[in-house]
Length: 89
Figure 1: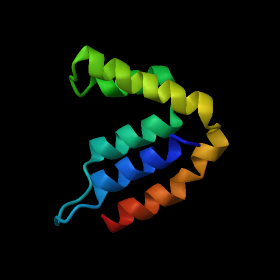
Figure 2: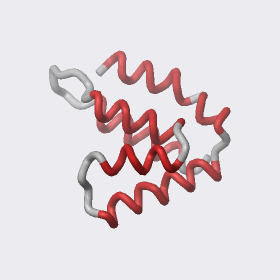
Figure 3: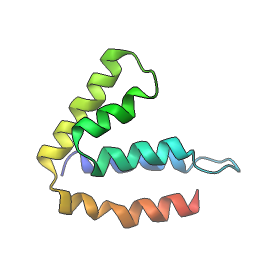
Figure 4: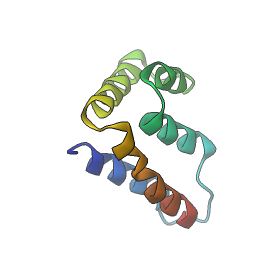
């Protein structure tokens, strides 16, 4: 559960800034993939951003920690929170 709070803070930081713009669909896709998809699909999602390999690998390592520390059913509890945040941004 210790990683859940930073994930929520990152989501809020990316979405709730003072600007009149919609949330980038790529960000929504990345967050959805990070929380709910298997690691191999998340890796493909990260690679489409053309990030340096060490950055992509570190994101995949964090994803592995999320998958091992937080059950899928606990991660599903983030869905209503994400929907509220995205609706307000």
